[in-house]
Image (tube, rainbow, N blue to C red; front, side):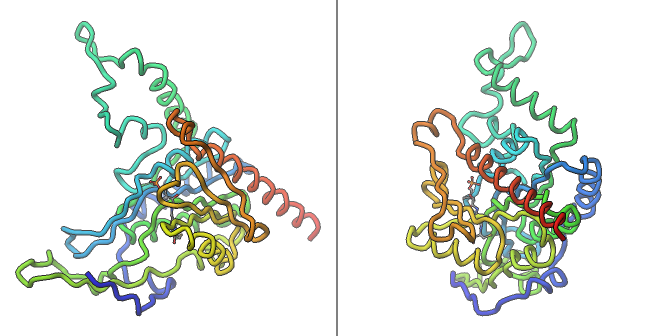
Length: 323
Ligand code: 9Z3
């Protein structure tokens, strides 16, 4: 497989040349309703979570995917809810979901939590307390209208939905946080360049030409939601690149925070880069023992970001008063 990255596609024209997801109108209506039912000072966060697929054929049989399970996003969504946020959870279908995440995608299937006693199916006693807590939280937040889940699969679905949600929440300004933890593909094949039908193996080896995905953080920060508090994530595997790439993203897009993490240590350590702390980022870390004991680093990440978000809202209010 060879990658050709020469042709850069403009983010503004991307949407004219690629097909929207089938749930776009549904998502528009649900997000609109969700936002309108929140009180005027309710803090809202859009959490993006999981990986994106990049189809190789329009009638898709094959696609390129990535490793992301959605742990960061789903765990963070739980923490944001606990801190009083209303959460729009934009997640990759079949990736981890808040509260449900403990009973899916692990080595134990849902049936291993259950037993049948005198004909009745029930949760095994050793799981009752934890499952009860997760069930109560899940029902409480969904019934109170504090958690809305919107799903995507492909890169294109994700981009359309991200823009749609952005435009719907833009007018709420500083009290909205964007927490962009989804692992978004850097390369894709535009639909007009894709094979219509299943690529045939009879033609021998496969060479793919993939275009660079337009940098959507630019229009997001500059045009779609210029007043919101935006947190992007930077993932690397080479430690030499992480700091420079995080600083570069901050300079290029001018948003509030870049959370930088390494693939292999992402559950124990992240760095928060801001304009003021570009050379000396704050470190959030927990020990391997804490992770093994079930602590999530997202608790500390979200607490710190919520604190900074509060400050951002206060500063914006101050500026409004003095204007
Ligand atoms: C992240 O860095 C997330 O923390 C992880 C979480 C994807 C590592 P898991 O889902 O993993 O818990 O398994 N997201 C990276 C987001 C991303 O793709 N950022 C782009 C980049 O690094 C820029 S927006 O270039």
